[in-house]
Image: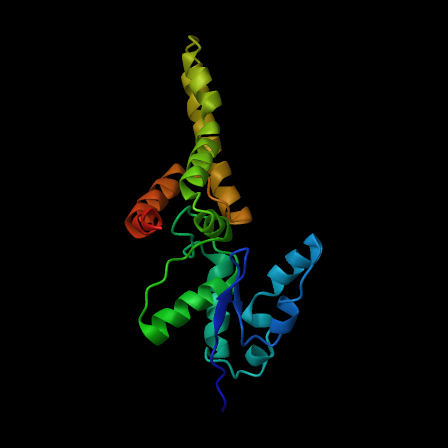
Amino acid sequence: MVNIEPSFEIDEKGRVICQSHSKYPHFLQPNKTPFEERQMENELTCLTCSHYENDECYFPRAEIDKIELDRLTRSRFQCNLCGNKIDLMLTLMQKIYYEVKFNMKMPLVCCNCYESLKKKKFEEYFIKRVWESLSFYLPSILLLINPFPFNIIAVLGYIVFIIVFKIIIKLKFHYSLFLMDLIKGKKFYDKNFKDKFELT
């Protein structure tokens, strides 16, 4: 049985594309409309590749199915820099491939963080995301300032609501609004990326 070795590249938007994918020429077509771009992102998966269908990929079909199930049902595949859930399957496949084949640890980075790194504006992006996260708590701070005693209950209720809301956003829309995710991501950035950018 022939095993097709994957080969990966990252496009200008930070999306991982497999050069061995049977639809690779289609992915490279220029001047796509926003709708076509979104449609292409949906196709950036092993499941749309003929090598997967014929079970001739480097990754066995059963393993691809398991990775896809994990990607869809669990939140362990998160961006190391911001906590967003990684929603493009080929990003995961690239990471797994390099770890298995070359014993090389690769960070998982979402497209937004990749773009900010590429533009050397991650710290600006980080601050924007922190303010985004904190803005949800502004009403609770205003309620605490108010001297009425029932406000403590309202504040606690609001905080619980916000936490549940943030969990739903993360699970449904793959976007993390949790401050802890961002702080962990900043530490990861400082450890792995910051010095490299300061040298350039």
